[in-house]
Length: 287
Image (tube, rainbow, N blue to C red):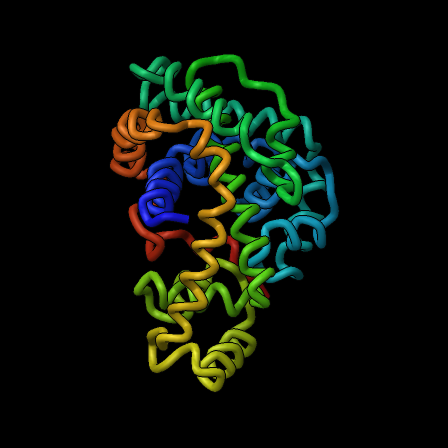
């Protein structure tokens, strides 16, 4: 993959993240899950996985990839003891419509065009090996301007997410390994963002020691070998976006220009964390 294509793939991911993933932080969405009796962790795991149906906790843990499986299983079991897939999916759509409608307005200028471009990209994307993307593609469209914009962005976001899990698995990495390498790759302190994923500290510290012994980490940063490995994972993820970027062609710059102001508005509103360091830890494992 040429460098400019790689760069465009990453720019698209960065600009879409606040638009698509604000659903996990918008107060309107959280209130909807609370009305179903779900706390933050239950709402997160149930609402994100519901596009695949009422699958058990181990399936959710395997699909999401980097969360501590016993924590995921507990939250999923608790959520489905309280509510149903149709109710969670309805709350998720309503939360996106209300929350993004509040931040962006009911009909943001250019939203129809951006949705059309995102749908073109998603229509061109391969579905095999991408369970969350496939699940989202199976759902009906919300049917309103903001809801359809969000759903299209969510599809493109989860396509890259599914591909990223496949990439690090193919590189022979385990969840804690890829999370720690990612923290160092992004310049975050080791074991910082990872705390939102619920892993026991003993396992985290043992994995840090192992990565250092293998010459992938040194002190708080990556070695040359560690950086090369982590970059290779990202490049493999970028390559998975080739069909979508090919479908967009030169229109990708128009799409980036349309979405960027919305992403900025969402972050400014507090509906999406401004950095990974600001992500809440409400999904971490509880004793």
